[in-house]
Amino acid sequence: MPYAPFNLEGKVALVTGGNRGIGFGFAEALYDAGAAVAIWGSNEKRNAEAVEKLGNGAKAWTVNVADESQVAQAMIEVAGHFGRIDSVFANAGVGGGAKSFAEFPTETYRRVLSVNLDGVFFTLREAAKHMIERAKAGDPGGSLVGLASLAAIEGAARNEAYAATKGAVVSMIKSIAVEHARYGIRANSILPGWIATDMTQGAQDNPAFAEKVIPRVPMRRWGEPKDFGGIAVYLASEASAYHSGDSFVIDGGYSIF
Image (tube, rainbow, N blue to C red; front, side, top):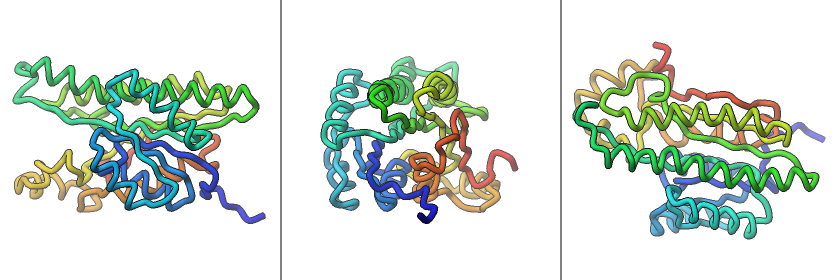
C-alpha cells in the first residue's frame, strides 16, 4: 500500500472561527485533503458563505465560543452529525488593544480573555471529552490545536490582554499534551506572524507599517491564510501521530531576524 499519511478521508475536523482568515485557510485545506469539516463562527452569513465555498461534507454551526453552554452543545451536535471528531482547531479569536497599558480598559481585557482564552479552554475541553470516550471504547487518537500568536513570545506593546491569552494558549496546550498522550491524543499550538486578515486590516492600511515592519519579514511579504493549509493537514493527519506538545511558528522568519 502506498504511503499516504496526509489523506484525511474518513476523518472529521472542527475549526472554530473557520469562516474567514486563518480559520478558513485551515478549513479549506482540510476539506481538500478529504476531511469532513465542521465550521463554528458567530456570524451566520459568513458561516453559510464558507460552507458554500467548500461544498458537500462541510457544515457550519453558529457558536459564540465564549459561551460555555453553546460550546458544549455544539460539540455534541458536531459529533452526532458526523459520527466522530478527529481534530479540533481552536482558532476563534479577537483583537483588542489600548493607547497604553496604564489606560487599558477593563472591558476590553475581559472581552479578549473571554474569547481568546475561555473560548479555547471550553472548546478543547469538550473535544477532549469526546476523544477520551472514543479512546476508552477502543478507538484512540485525536489532534487538538490551539491558535496562539507571536505575541505569546514577543513583546506586544499596548496589547497586553491579547498577549496574555496567546501565552496562556501555549502553556495550556503543553498541559493537554502531557495529560492526554495515554489516549493517543496529541496537542500542539500554532503561532502566526503578520498575516493579512480582517484582524490586521488596520496595519495593512498603514503606510508606515508597510514601510518599516513588513520589510523586516525575511520573506518580504504578508502571510496569507493559505499559508496555514499545510500545517493544518499535517496536524490532522497520521503524519503527526507522534508529534505533541509543540509550538509551530509560521511567520516567514520574522521572529528570528
